Each structure stands twice: as structure tokens, then as C-alpha cells.
Length: 323
Image (tube, rainbow, N blue to C red; front, side, top):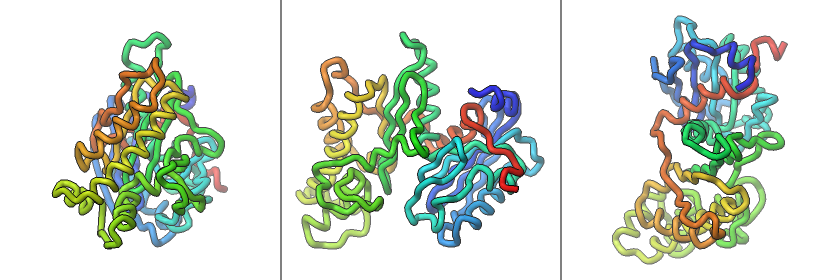
């Protein structure tokens, strides 16, 4: 925790915002993490970055009309550099999002000091805090966190410190190479990345390649797999095994105390989970055998809780920085 952040927020409520491609979730949280107020609204993703910043500010005002909060933390889609407050890279799920001055722009609109980070890293924050609270020889702990849904995101913490990397890009696990994805185009412009075989759309697209038949969504593939459709089973287990293989290799590289796999895709059932765990275990070096990927500790509040916690650990961007 930086001294400036500690001074700004100690004992006072904080606003937490979770920005996704379709929805903005906002909460006012007391110093002990109790949710005092909630609000959600659609993300005006097709209207551009200015409209999104305006909507975020409006959501913050809804949960803190009396302006009791000391600061605001935002967990946002895209590659976020928390030091500069910039969106350094993004897909087109939010039009014109790359290059947005998220920290300063939101601070100017709300009047709060603002801390910002990638949504998956922010969601992993409470997991890391729980790990730190356990007895540990180093007094901290290491975490490998994957979020597998529409895309594949992640977060890596080593010895109690969340890694951000150059331009805030650390943890983008979906853009690691995967043999199962060889030759398939990725949204980032490269080919052969994990996201295009292991994400929900990636699994659905693989099923279409196997059958030649269009499919509307991952859940349809899961239903067909449960009914014994061999191609559906293959599409799901291929995506799961690809994710497990990459996570196992990363575990060997970083030596985590805990591995967490969240997001919508793992919730489709044991077929996916079992294939991921088997592939993960097959990659592990001896000292890590017995390490098993787990579900997240927290539910739907994890992102806003993690966003609020950013205000105590990351640089704060203050109103007036754009002027």
C-alpha cells in the first residue's frame, strides 16, 4: 500500500466500478468491505470512450450521491497501465477504448482520486489478499489466476506482489501460444493463441469446424456433449486441455501456492473441469505435484471489491491532471 493511498482512503468508504463490454457495475463499500449501495447500467460500448467515461461517472454518482467516498477504484476491460492510468490496448468490444486516459478522465468527471487496473487483475486482488492472510514461510504467497469466458484473461502474483509489466500487459494468458490453436487467427492479430481454442467462443467455433454446423453459443455445445455428441465432447475437452496445459507450464515457471480458474466457461460442468485438471497435472514438475486449480473464493462481488481495493495499493490519479 502506498502512503498516499493509505492517507486518502483510511476509514472512509470507497467507490468500486467494474467495466465490462456489456455492463457497468458500481458499488459503494465501507472500510471493512461491506457493500453500502449498488447500481448497474449497460455499457455504451458502441458510442465510444467519452460516452463510456460519462456512464462510469454517472454510475459512481448513483452509489455515492452524498459524496462520502474518499476515492474510486475501477476494474476495466482492456490492457490497463495503472501507473499512467491509460488504456494501452483493447479489442473493439468498446469502440475507441485503446488510448483512453482512464484514470485522469474519470477523476476529472467525478472529483475523486482514481486507481485503475485491468478487470481480471482487480478480481484476483481479493484472492491474493486471502492468500497473504494464510500462514506462509515468506509471509505472502504466489497466485496464478485465470478467467476463462468470452476471452481468456489472467493475473500473476509472485511473493505477494501482483505483476503489471510493461504497459500493464502482464497476465494476458489468452495470448500465449497453444498447439491446439495452431494457424487459427486471434483477436490480437496473431495466430495460434490459447484464447481462440479455450474461450467460450473458441470452443463453439471449434465445434463448428468439427461438424460444419453453426452453433449459437457455448451452452448449446455443452448440452449436446451431455447428450453424447462426440464432437461436442471433443470441442470442450480440447479447449479445457489447452488451458490446463498452458496453466501447468506457467505454474512451473512461477511456482504458485494457489491456482484459480474462474469465468463462465468452467461453470459448464465436470467435463471441462476434469479435462483441464488432468492436462494441468500432466505438466507439473515434482515439487508442484498435488497443486490443483480451484474455483474463485468470491462470487459476483469480486470485481467491485477488487476495484475498491485498488485505491489502497496502486497510484491515485487526481482531478485536474488533464488540464
